[in-house]
Structures are given as structure tokens and as C-alpha cells.
Length: 331
Length: 127
Image 1: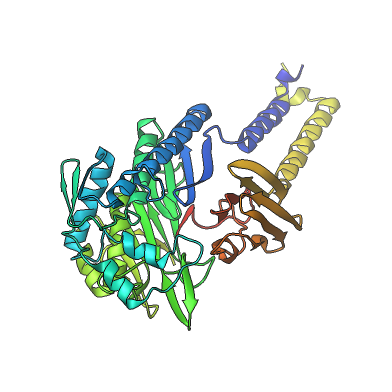
Image 2: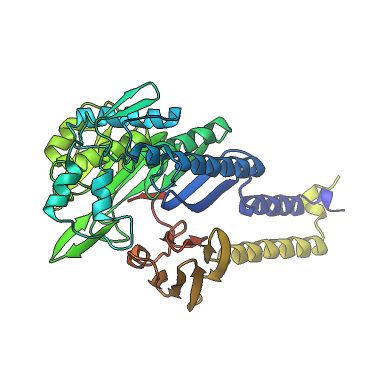
């Protein structure tokens, strides 16, 4: 009998300990990616039994699809499509009203640098279609006619347009709102840590077991490289840049973030990353700051508590808000 | 009465040495064989291709617009030809870290890297 042989017992205990150490973690994590909202949506969830995590992630993707049907301009029955029809008022779903309320607030505070009524202009440039193009000046002037922070008004769930020809585009904010809603659903279903990431616009829920979330910020001019890594928990991280959807013509870069004043792609920044409380707000702020440029952009950001930004200007220089450095872990 | 240490026979010592040997060999084997680095692709939401990231190969992935050409080589996995209009997927560069994604949204192709040994210093990329 080995039980009166202490050395054998010690070795057996050692073997058990090593086996335990090498076993897969009992704390499962579910990571799933799907194409949705015209981009890749990745959801990571942890802190529950595997079966509950799988159900939570599936529910989040279902919620994303539902809200996309409401807020996409490519869905003919969506609120956005109804708003872009030649009408003067439309009663919308509560979720759409929520997005529009936030968008109008950022539009007003940014003095029109963020705009919800660029539907006609975006249609002209056709970045979402097969062949993006440079429209002529007259067409751009016509597409900008009547737009601006006062072009839409919201009263409860009733949206009024200043002119029937206005076309609403929530592309600069709806994706973020949908990410927020999916993240909230994960929280409601008991997920203690996770992330919802739609093409780089993300909400980080809680904190993974080892350390807070580490988020790489894409270098706008070097694919596969990051300009910084930030460490965050329960925060939204959003980046807008001129390098995801663009084309070059005569050495000039034409991208999809438009200056509502000129109707052409904004020229003052390469990328803007915002860390804030919600992805929808981060989405709108990143776009507005991109249009405004580093100086006016940081002035706008000062209006929003708990919000930080890293702006990479057109000349490649870095401009950070005062609290940005506190989140940075490298370089 | 004999101390337990004194009743270790030669056979007991042999068993002890054997167990220690098994433990050390097991640790070495487990350390040398992490989960394999994999390339996984979905076409229209369904898994359509799974391969070892370390095995160079080329494959055509079928989507609604046609074939998206995926190359796996020493640099990682990358898309070298695609029928989509803007061909953003071809400019994404190679994917080689766990969680890296290549996407051809119009052709409904999604390529991801799983269990790569070469981990990035971050969990997600904001771009």
C-alpha cells in the first residue's frame, strides 16, 4: 500500500496539481463574429456558464439585426428610409427618436460639424456603392441646400423636416447606438465582462479576469500597426479615420467623412479616437472632431465630461485631450 | 516503530522515480503542443473553410458576388483577389494574431484567426 509512503503521496499530489494547472480554464469565454450593419461585428462575452454566454451572444446579435432594420438607410421599411422620403414629418420608433435626439444635440453643440441630414450628399459621393465618384460643384451645392442642425426637429417621437427633399442619414451615430444597446442586453443577461465591437467602434463591459481591456488604436497610415494601446473598463472606444473607405484621385485622398459646410471630405485629420460613456456619443463626437480639426475639436470635447480623445492631424501630429494619457499603457 | 520514510522499499523508490518521470514528460509535451493556430472562414454566415495557419495554401471562398481568393503563407492569411467593388478586404494586410479578422462585407466572407501563438499586446483594435 502506498499510503504509508509519503514520497509517493507527495509525487501524486504534485501530479494532480500540475494536471489542474494545465487544464483549460473553467471560466469560459464566447467570442463570435458576424457581418452586420455593413461591417464585422464581434462580440466577446465571459463570466457565465458557457450555455448562458452562447444564448446572450445570440440575443445580442438578434437585437443588432432588429435595430439595423430600424435605423439603416438600406432597409426600405426602416425609419431612416421613411424619413428620407419626400415628406415633412414622420412618427418614428422610440429607439430612432433617441438616436436623433442625441445626434441633434451633438449637431447643435458642434455648430453643424456633425450633421444628420447628409443623405443626399452621401448619395452623390456613393461611398457605399460600387463606384465612388467626385460629384460636380453644382450637385454638391444642391445637396447641401437646407441641411444643418435646424433642418430636423424632434417632438416626442415625431420628426419634422424643414424641407421634404432632405434625406436623413444616421450613419455617423446609429451603429454606435446599436452597439450600446447590444452591450446593455449582454449586461442585462448577466454577462460580467465582454465587448461589442462593430468595425472598431466598441463598448467594453466590465473587466476580464486578468486585467482591464486593452485596446489598440490603429495607426492611420500603417496597416497592422497601432499608435497607442489604451486600458479601459466600462467605456466606449470609437475611432473615425480617413483610411477605411477612400479612393485616391490625382494624388488626393477622398474619404467618407464629409465637412457639411463644403460638401467634400474633411481635410484636417487622419483619425480621431474618442473614449467616452457611450458608443453612440463617441461615434458622433469622433465625426464632429474629425471635421473640426484638432483645436476646435478639443474645444468641443471639453463640453463632454468623462470624454477623452486622441486626434491625429492631417500632418501626422498627435493632439490629445488632457486626460488621455491616463488610459494609455503603451507606447 | 519504523518512520514512514524508513519503510520505502527499492520498489517504492522505483515507482516514485517513474511517477516523477511521467510528470516531467507530460509537462514538456503539454508545453510543446499549444492549441493549433487556425484560419477559419465563414461564407454567408456558415463555416466554409478551416485550416492550419502554419500550412501554406490558397483557396477560393464562394460568396454571392463570386470567388474571394485567400492565401495562407508565412506572413499569415490574406485576401489577394475579390469580386467586391471597393476591395477593402485586399488592403487589410495579413491576419496572423488571435482575433484578427479579414472581411469582405459585400461578398459575405469573414476570415478569422484562432489560437495563434503570436498574441497581440491588445484585446481588440479600434480602427
